[in-house]
Length: 208
View (tube, rainbow, N blue to C red):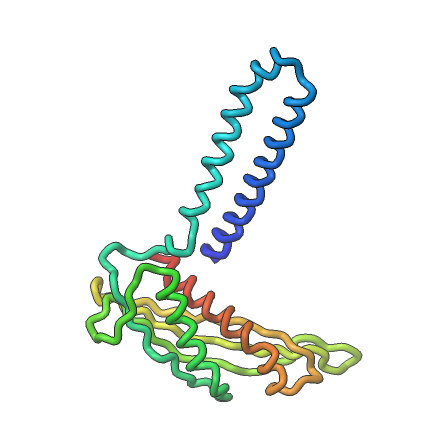
């Protein structure tokens, strides 16, 4: 996804810049000990220029934060409705936890203000459309890995523009076949909520 790739680039940039900083410090110390004074004077402007570039570029990571998600300037408020569960199998914790986590993420990582008003600029609603188990891997003619498939249908209504977009977010979660579904849910619950929240967030804020 766009935001995930952006986040990865930020970390790579951060590591590279700090690597350069370390190299400059080591080089400066080495020159201080080994080189004649005339050469030190000759190389000093070059070293200073590189250091300034490195330290300046290191501040660029601020512009790539999650707060810089794509939101039209006219959008100020958002209403996040409860995500219902319409799957055949009902995990009673999924809908309330996913709804709460999505609200927290949007409020915490965007400039939007959450409201319960029916006049919110954006209104997000949705439902769990699939929550089913299938066989993912077979070993010695027996199922060795099962897969929990989770899908959520999301609708984003833009009240300012009078339009809406709909999309589906799906994610597979594998677990050993010797585990019951209840045991797998206990192990996977945090990952399910985290991954589904991130996927929904990225879809909502990456296409405006």
